[in-house]
Image (tube, rainbow, N blue to C red; front, top):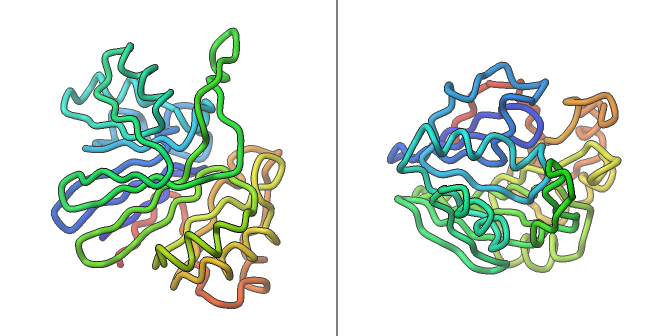
Length: 229
């Protein structure tokens, strides 16, 4: 499995069979991402919640790829279906299998709205995702979240991801200290930080994680750096 950070919370994952998954496709307006929308080629897009910096460019991406499948919560799926997008709505605990990857929606503690609309509208519950690849690698993308006890009792104890991608930016999500606690609770082999340094309000030094995380190895990729697991 290959993984690439596109800045902010956007991640690209490619399975051994070549399935390209893009999480939170914030590309065009993402100051940390040097790519253009037509330079990403996902087969599947997963959206954690409705905020503009996570909903991103999904509609434009879908218009360039009629075979794209979008997996998100029910409310966002209805919004996208009305825009002609092939969207599948699921909820906490449910999963869908796409190609050689099982995609399960889990909880996140955050808010969710279509904040890019003139009258901000409710966009369902925020979510995280667990991706189970056919080589037995499990990747947990936490979405935007604060620390909550399910990270230990459900995500860590039941699902046991090998890689945990966790926000550290503060203001809208966990800060570095809470993310370090989350990493120790989840107890993956690797922890990867996200949702930081894209904007001045969420400026952080991810190297501080190396002093705080006890139970796993911290990986701090550069934007567009490819990691292989």
